[in-house]
Length: 435
Image (cartoon, rainbow, N blue to C red):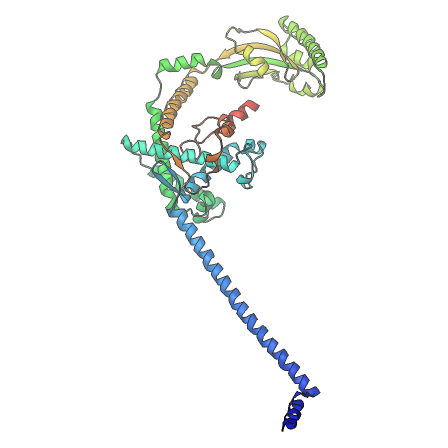
């Protein structure tokens, strides 16, 4: 019995070549079925993940849009400012700023086509920080002025301004072959539409009108205007004069001794020309006589006015001669020589006359004083408005005040910007100084 069982077990274990072939096929088919099953499960997981990502993306996009339209991005005083409102002011301010100072901004190294947050304005502040600071300041001014206008019972019909606003946007859409919707988003941000932007534009116009009202009621009297003129004559008077610069050729590595020698040589030439002018010789003819080759074409033309400056301002005159020209002791025919140590020149200068357009001057002074008073009043209002960075994007608020000094020194506040009330500091003062 046991021998038979052993024989059967032995026979069961013996596999033919065919059996082994079939067994191998069975194993491979089993592997294939498992692989297919894993692939199917993996595909389902991937499809599910993609579907989930799409749902999440749509959800985030919807939330971003809802947040931009309804949630506070920053808070100014008691006013919640949404992202879409902030973008309106930001884009309006930046576009106006670049339009006004584009060439000078390029000189300062700003690439207006690149990300502002990656370009430094100062060591601690990017251009994005600077534009954020400018935008928040403008919104604060608008909110403060609108609140005060309501408190003072001031009203303003914006219909005419809005009509001009609509006309301007329609013209821009036509010139750039854009739809109205595309113009709004290109100008004021991705969530901007006519319906959403109009309330902000109207509020901005109201603030501007109220500021103009403040300047009107703060116009100075004649006595105040005259007093201001007397203290600031050089800013308003004009002078006619002739000048000729003897230019020195000084090497970059020249010693003080070498520079002094060059200046002494120029002085001798300037004194000789001054003596000739005082003796009655023609100033322009002497310029032709003394001009070096690259100056020759500047003098002696048909009008003989190469050396003549008419209606010159104090700020436009070379620094080396401006104080002498605007000295109230000057009289017609006064002639002198003046050194320009900075540029290694020596000037021969003849004074002709000083003048002032009283009507233009008085109007300008009146406007200046009225704007100063209105600006001081507005600044007093804005001091009461605390800025809260709700979204945490206003990085400039964390920068120490000392790092923003160059921003404040670049220009004065109160300049009009687009359809806003006032732009923040500008490079205007620095640009004037460079001239």
